[in-house]
Length: 129
Length: 275
Ligand code: SF4
Ligand code: SF4
Image (cartoon, rainbow over the protein chains, first blue to last red):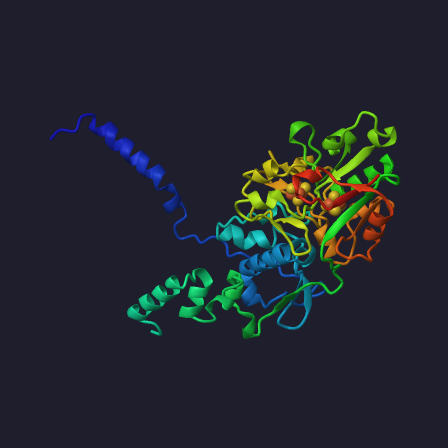
């Protein structure tokens, strides 16, 4: 069997493979930096609407639930497990403590490559430089 | 298993023979099962039922409660200036964009007599009425066609009569716009954000591809306050419970003659104009 234009083809293949696999070998051995969501200063609030472990894994479930209750039923108050009452609102409650989307929400969302579209409508606080 | 195949067929046959369709047949086979299914729990409630000692959700005790909300607009009191104040308040606090031309978004706007009340158009009407500028907004109809045509239940009627929109569910099909005979609904043909001069951070904007309209300020009622437009109108717009004969709104409706927009369509609009 004869390979016509052998050298060109081989070189072409090598270049193609090099470019194609670039993302794999260029990132090998490096881990993306672990996200560090900025904690809320103790002076602002000492407790969230639920404990940290729950919020970390399930805040989206909670927010969906809030959304349904507020929009569909008009129930707007949430009594948390520790007996405190909160207004169920992203802008009026969550963002009052978590004042930077970039330093809080985006940290994990970017790391996990999830792109929730909450912000398409809900306004986020202006980022302070 | 409680009911085997034979029994099932027998019972189904009996139920069928007795002409008992639907829920009655169901009750025979599995008593009580329908009661529980009356209201679908949200996914969250399925994962965390309240019985497991979980957090509770409730209305604000300060919230205004009504059986049937409505609005009375007193055309003698409504000056152009007051109307503009009301419109401006609504637009600012609800992040209503200012888009010129055909893609305009409106929750509350000014319109002429002939446009608002086409079927009572009368060339010899009192010029004071004929030349007046009327405030138009969603009528929160008692029999809302927009709700009936919405394929996703994004538009729905609350128990207190408010015709609400759940923006999260709107797919932008615009059936509601075709259904509404009052032009109360606007579609976002483009991202509205660049057209909002000053954003009000505590209320969401909308996004491209959804329909929007007046909500009777449900977010204000929920904290015990009156709609922005009523507050800003200097008494020309009175919000209240249509079902409460003792309300200020009903007193006004008794005291003067009022008209509604296109009443012949059977939508039962709940915005009344005192003329
Ligand atoms: S005025 Fe239009 S949008 Fe408002 S409830 Fe009636 S039909 Fe629906
Ligand atoms: S009731 Fe509220 S949402 Fe409706 S027009 Fe008035 S201010 Fe706007």
